[in-house]
Structure formats: C-alpha cells, structure tokens
Image (cartoon, rainbow, N blue to C red; front, top):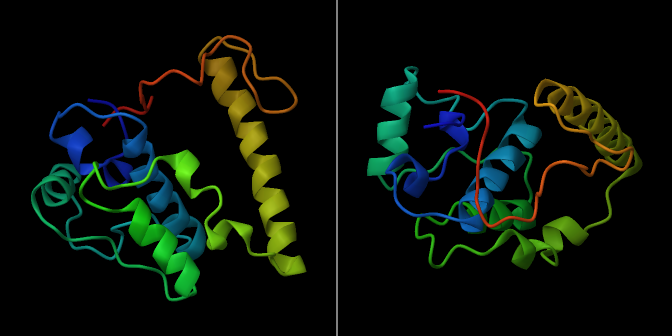
Length: 156
C-alpha cells in the first residue's frame, strides 16, 4: 500500500476498488492542511499510522474542520470527505463550487501564488526523482496524469 495515511480515502485503506473519487477525499484533506497548517487528523490521539488507518477505514469519524474555514469552505470539505464514495463528487464536479469561485483577499492571493510557485518547484524535484520531465507550466511530458488510476508515491 502506498500513500500518506492521513490523506487516504477509507476505500483505499480497505483495499476496495477506487478511482478519482478517492482523489476527492485527498483534496478535502489538503484543504484542511492548507487552512490549518497541520495535516488532517493531527489533533487525534491516534499517533501511530496503522491506528489512524484503522480509524479512517472503520469509523464514521471525520477530521476536525479548521475554524478559519467559512461556511462555503466547510461545505466544500464535507463534500470531499463524504464517506460513501458513490455519493462523493468527482474532483471535476467541484470546480464550480462557490468556495473555489470566491475571490481571495490580496494577502491570501499572494499566499496562494507563493504556494503555487513552491508546488511547481516541488513538482520539478519530484519529477527529477522519478525520471520524468515537468514542463514550466507544471504539466508532465512523461506521465499520463489523465489515467483513471489513483496512485500515491509515498510509502507508508
């Protein structure tokens, strides 16, 4: 199994068939981390990765939502973290969500631009480690990122 436990969808941990909707779960976890500066489940006493994986796969619990998220942000994350993958939206279905469409204040916009610049830089470093090329616009020459499989490359 590959992935970061606190970002893994329940169906992935359980070894069930999964697809892009598992990525939606991970997206919700990323929003939690960006809003709180802490990974999801970090307030949980389940420090051991396997205990956390058991909790994610076997309970109805959800990670705590950061207080800084407004109503739209909380709705977005809750939709991402729907425990039923059949009712969880595809990532593309969330593009028009009001949380993503809201104009950011200038300080937040600058932070977003900084995160984007860092992300593109990290993507280049990761690409170098995996023998593929990332173009200046962040796309990859050697990876087919449009495939229907969902793979995370970090070992548990």
